[in-house]
Image (cartoon, rainbow, N blue to C red; front, side, top):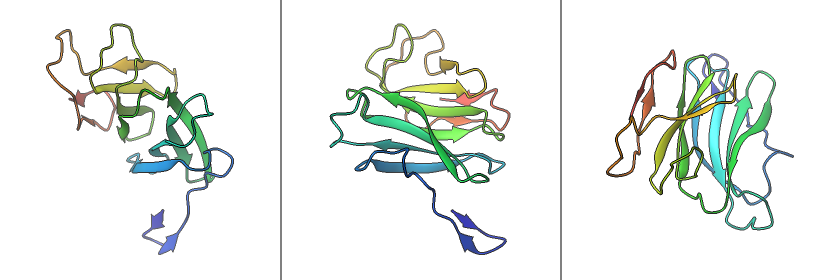
Length: 145
């Protein structure tokens, strides 16, 4: 992480949290800078219960924790953003995270305070394809899918 005011670089510490061999996806940061999120997957970690995961990093404490994990069949996933304060996490996945899920890349919002996950890409209408690039408002109340 690069801090513009000080000009310093800090590495995100994943030791002890992320199994060896996992590959990082794109990094996303909350608007207030309190949370950094990234997806990771490991094709060589077949002995693990899950090989696709989302991690959150707290830059103030330099701590990284796993937020979600998926079974091996859910390779297609990515973290897409946060609400400004980092409470709501926006991500896409083909994992079957809610009832009536099908093999589409769906958009989900997780409330970090309650742990609830809501699929927001269906709106009562069956999708006719994948949802790739959603975005979330700073207050976390609206999602463009």
